[in-house]
Length: 462
Ligand code: FAD
Image 1 (cartoon, rainbow, N blue to C red):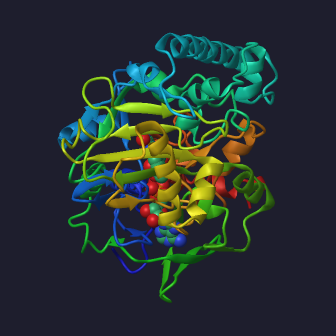
Image 2 (cartoon, rainbow, N blue to C red):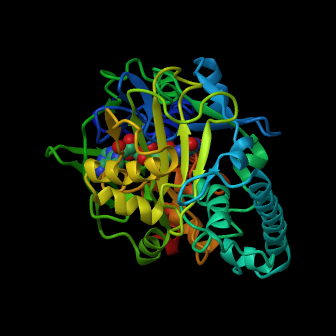
């Protein structure tokens, strides 16, 4: 990199790396990527747990659909180890609050209604987009009410959780119908859920993309790790980016790829303050938390074999340790189980100690499998919401948030451009969304660099 690069990219997650690659391919080679942590990958992040690589962040890739999924393509190139998850048997594996399974027929009936409700919501959303004024939107819950089959009982709630919260990270009550249904990631890329379980981690895919333009992920001068950006001073003349260690980097433009959760905090101080329209667009969007709690046991006491990979736990409190998965297919003999919680439950458990969480989880497991089950040997609780570099897991489109505001979320301000998963129009929350927005933002900036059509300087934008 030269002394003053043309573009500084803040963050080396999927969107930052894909933006950088797009600039490089277009001949803009003097770039500098500043990343707060000691690695690239961002929310695509594995860790070692009891000798096995588990994904704390993104875990699934989707395939089998009519639209090419470039992230899946890259995964294939690096021979990423995945297994196709099978949720079909959930109706046989749904436990009551006080233990014991629900009769399969009963769960099947509830599931059938949930599927019909999803179909209705998808059709109704299309109708809203086509026929009703641009700004009109409703929550998924309102859509469910229009279907006249709003989930009410704990069993209906846990099935609804599986259909919605488990994907959006937030309940139907707060989630936009129009911008969530139909679920583009599945419609386009497919509903085949490829679960990543690879010793190298899902992050090998981000590394693969980065290696196409960086000579090394440790020593290429265009990538600086452990650089926490704290201040971005911007004007018509360019940007000055200050990091926590006191360094200052100057460039003509910046691309900010941090999560919307981070933008909602004061980690990065923009000078001058970002304009009000931008701050409103940032503060009104939603960053949710999705928590996978991993538990390692000395031996298996849960059902194993075909059709047992997932089970549901029903509770009057919606989302209380609802969805469980074992890793026997991926890591035979690992004796690892994990349970997923989201949104307010995630916020709550993040405040507890690991011991307190373990105690709650063990009450649930003892209810299902008896009092003689062993204590876990280890527990892993990712705390995405508390981490200042993420402040949550991924974004979710709130029901009162319109398209105009979302466009503003992604709009540049002077020489400062914005990218990241939350700016995706089609695949919000997904690694594919991050990948595509990186390309889109870079192309937007290239238009400015090469053709002088700089959207950041539209009169409304400064
Ligand atoms: P990030 O990955 O957050 O990249 C931003 C980068 O900026 C990070 O590396 C961060 O360290 C860095 N940064 C932050 N602040 C600063 C600063 N001040 N200075 C410098 N650098 C900074 N997606 C799927 O497709 N499938 C899934 O199954 C899936 N499950 C998920 C489960 C969980 C628990 C989580 C957390 C995410 C999941 N996702 C999933 C979402 C997916 O991981 C994200 O959409 C995607 O990785 C986001 O990429 P990004 O580049 O937009 O943001």
